[in-house]
Image 1 (cartoon, rainbow, N blue to C red):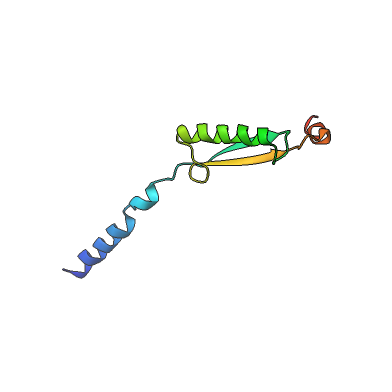
Image 2 (cartoon, one colour; image 1 turned 45 degrees about the vertical axis):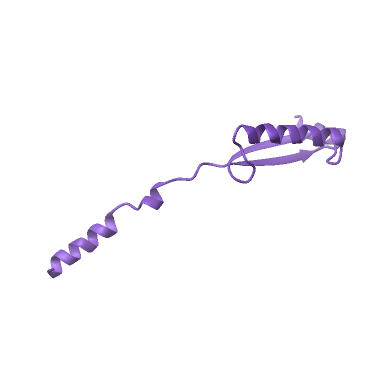
Length: 85
């Protein structure tokens, strides 16, 4: 192989698109949950458990394609007053 052909081959290999870079991962979806119940309340735990099971049945898994952000007011009225403007 001649020198020019070798250099041209190297240039073509360097310029070709790479398969690994062309593929994009699925974007991480985010859900925000604001609850007025404390974290240890049995009713709140039941509701969140049912919600997460329903999401799993639909193919959404926390940490893989979904991130859930929990915020709790724990029955405090001052938290909701700060949100309203």
